[in-house]
Image (cartoon, rainbow, N blue to C red):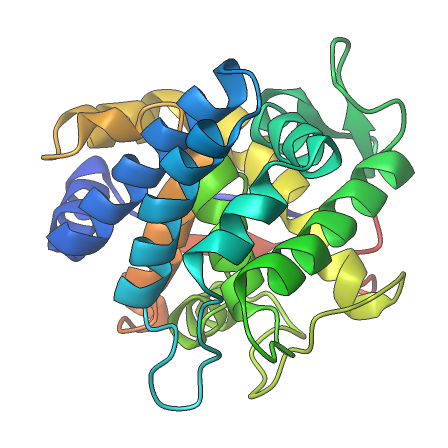
Length: 262
């Protein structure tokens, strides 16, 4: 079971460039702020340095509009981002992508990972999403905005908005494209899908990195090199508008087994 790139470099580059320039800029602004936040000692100033662009990006990406939850006030977000436990979880997840892999049909963590086991990774990921929901959003129930916040800060994996969920369905990934994807509070099938997806993406990147990097360097956003969770977020978003014949990313080999049973 694996993702595979099913188009050429030109299609990938065009998909990256066709994605909203504002959304690209929002992402890089927050990611750069997050790197400073991880590097600096915790303080009101360092937390505000991340909270300000993060809340602005979440609002730009739809928070508080239509049925989406609104963002909490700035001072609440700043206070939460000063918590050492939250900073540590975010830092560990932000650095985890290069250490994710799949071997013999099972998830593995490579030497040097911040997590001792995949269960520890899962616990951190779901715990961080819940912490972000409580810290940043008012009355949040779905995974969408906590996942967007984690994507912006850590760049780990796509966020399950309607376009990305649709893009995953086009790829052949089952069980995600539903109207309401509730934020899991503990271990369950929906939590496992969130936790397993980055490993499948990491496996694809390991196999197709030269192709992906060539496409990125040919685009207007070469800063996406190394930002593979975000790259797949963009590609799956763009794929939602395509047919299977013109897909960017496919998923094959599930057979009789659920794709997240690895």
